Image (cartoon, rainbow, N blue to C red; front, side, top):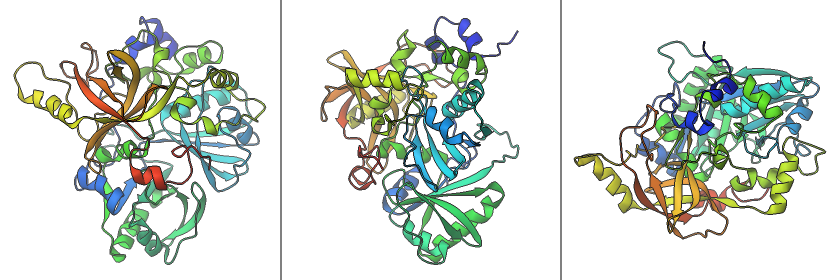
Length: 470
């Protein structure tokens, strides 16, 4: 008999770690959007030097929450303060478990007093869908899950299209497609602009530090909006480069956001035990994969909290109560144990890893360019003098920086510029279909600032990147 829930799946394995390290789900896929429109190097360069168009219509869930208790419900299940969350604004929304572990994150938009739209990966969507039923809240939720990873030629439909245009040349495109100067939209605020004959909502945003707007509207308008944007760029004399799915995920390496921390839901009683019974056996949390050299029998060693990711200034301490508040108060009192950093990989060591693919015998784990997306969540071991001091959680190559980079966490006493060791490759053969036979190797890494890109670090609007609330 097939298993119906994550809880049942976990009964058949020795630990959640065994389940996730041997997942058969295969490569993590950014669906529908072409892998490359020109080439991923030029597409990366466009957000630094010119203008780039991201098609974000397919790889994220969308959750619409509305009703008399929409604000109360979302405030209770996220760490964020809602006291300054007016209409036509957006926030980086972060829910945690009752034990204070990060579940994931979404971008949340407030459209009405009683209506919000949230966009992001599945773990946060699933948690909110469960929480709405578990707590008997007076809210209505519509869930538009991300497009299928492998649609096999079938037509794909979504609730909304979603595009982002960014880069130093982007303002010229905005003005041309709007038919004149656009409103002065503050960071993470929303206003209406024109794209041809359509009025659309626009969020002031930027994923790699450069100027950017994110626009969205009914999916039926997608082709019209896309062609109008491209024509506006042409009329403005701007080479607007369309970004494919290969390059898309790598922009976060420069801007410092870790997109896929392991949701901390595999342990814990009460609400969490009920959640594991609610989660289906084919859902993200049951089917996902952990990849990398860090292996622990304790799944909680893979969890992170908001302090470690730099999200602690979001926490609405003045709220009467929210899920995880007591646990976060305890973590705050004890003081942080780890912090987020960027790891800059030593180029000579990277080249040595690549060279093994041209030698006889078992090679080192292949470094796929520009992003080795072979698991839902990554965990590579970081050592100092042979002792574990951290975990690399998301890696890839930046053409703009001419470096392999990764984002992760290290012990609080590790300093910038220190040279550490990243262990690359799985410690033994796992059941993952995305991992070829290989041997482990070591790569020197320099502890670098986060964000790594100077543009994002020095000029980005106040946010978690600058440790100042917006």
